[in-house]
Image 1 (spheres, one colour):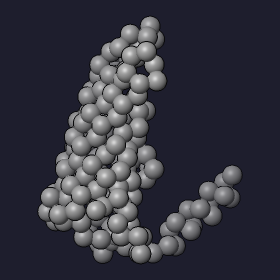
Image 2 (cartoon, rainbow, N blue to C red):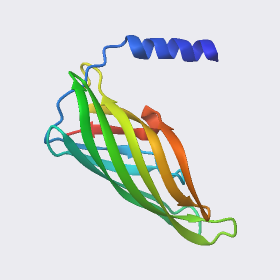
Image 3 (cartoon, rainbow, N blue to C red):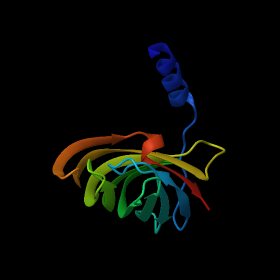
Length: 161
């Protein structure tokens, strides 16, 4: 297993990963950053060269009562390379969840992170990102502050129009 992960990491690093200018573009994709684990649709608008905003919406109606997550995030570009952008972000998410007694409760999540979004040469319309930082959330009737690290499949993948 470790050998497989090492080979995958080597291949990922050795591929050309040059990112693109995204100013004025709209990205549509998914994220799994909500502490409840609900998958969410994500829409990201690169307002100009230095800032972007995004919104997320997730819904799970598999139980008798539906749970949801809705939030917004603002990004600030720190450093950019040809196809790689480093950023800081601040996100706020409100959500509902089922507690141990199957009662619907509500909570929140506030994330302050740093991260990167990149694309591969020839696939400039698909942006992969990862993030790390701090999260404060109210979930399962507890308020916690914790470090977070979201890999590129958990953080977000966007298709830019």
